[in-house]
Figure (spheres, one colour):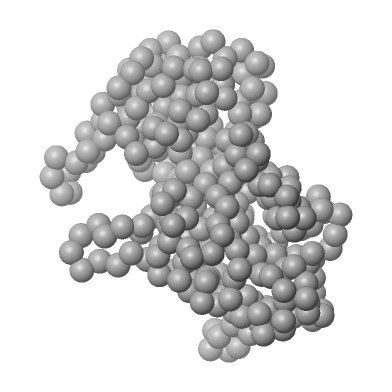
Length: 314
């Protein structure tokens, strides 16, 4: 196989290649003065099984164009198979028509990746599982729950008796239940949030018992951090001993690290390295990182060897 790294998250790409005991293929991904992306693959890839590692994180459009152009370059260089490894799939929150005359951008991006020449897609914790159906090529959606389970057991020294897993909304219950089962069927709670009218602050109710419990909010994306902080505050007000958050993709835009740092109700936020942390986020003492490099490396190895990937979902 050959691995090619985009510019979105080079440290993650390097760690994946290290775990696979290989090196990243040489490729130049540059920009012209006007911002156009230029790609040159500097190794022979004819007949090769190639994996392009690129999150479509901020700046999402630049990184998406890099991915598309690298895929096109590999296809024109006669690679036998091109797999787009997208640790964080941007535009995933636009998976349906939210109102009249609005796009389904996740479907558009899926079409672009397929048209560029990708033969397969590998991603982690899609915002909505049905996005797999937007692709007309094989798509594997991995889950980071094992990495979070390992970290939770370390933090609590294996004592799970006082833990409660919290879904930040009704739509995330299935995700939260998966973590709950892995933690010896810990109790589940749900944050019921809604807006009574446009421009009015969210009203939050907690469904389930959180009093005198260590609560773990489990979600797939944290963006500005406002909703997360509000949920932590509401849970704490119901008598929780502590509130921590475990979120796969740390988008953390609009000075989110400041909100998280200043929110006394939130003990810690643990995210994966699917998105490269900017310096101001990396130094925030409340934000911790767990790596998904091992998970992605094993999936890449199995795909390349035509082995089953489904056992990674267990």
